[in-house]
Image 1 (cartoon, rainbow, N blue to C red):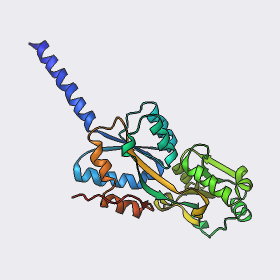
Image 2: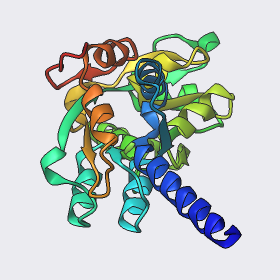
Image 3: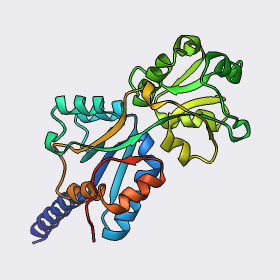
Image 4: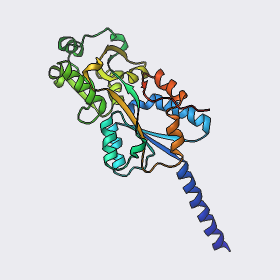
Length: 257
């Protein structure tokens, strides 16, 4: 009898574990989405009582993790290249892919040094002094790829390339300026808005870099619980949060009660 009871208890535990696993929603998102996506997830959890777990990193690192078999449900990339990579690795449901938001590049500095800076080699080198300008690593981080493209278009990349501090994500770039470790940095407008510790000292002309589009998609391993939150990302509630945090929303909103 005791053996039978233990078998029943074990079976129930396994069943409960599988139900819990099927209810969990894990989102892989570009680090620049941190502030806005946390607020969206918090509101969704409040409305539905469903738990959303979000893992933030550079788009490249997350795409590679998915390719290696990481069990995420939703992937939000900071550019289309890494979404295309994830699709090519057969870890993304291609039918679900859609452009979600747009962003822009800005030059930031400490609020105490928040004078407008001209985007010329002389002005930037004077502002940097003996330090460095922080940008995300242009070899793989989208924000850095866009930043390098812009600086090359402006004809100032070669003057600055030996005065750069590379980081592994745009939020790490932001942190370098926040902590005073770099006097200037190039980040997304949404990151600058999210931080009270930096000020925008120049807008990077949007005709100097490829449009910054953040696509989102369901993975091929997405659970049934992922679809409602995926849809919620296009809701009016989510759009308000995104706009308040400096993003331009691309998709038409979905109506949610």
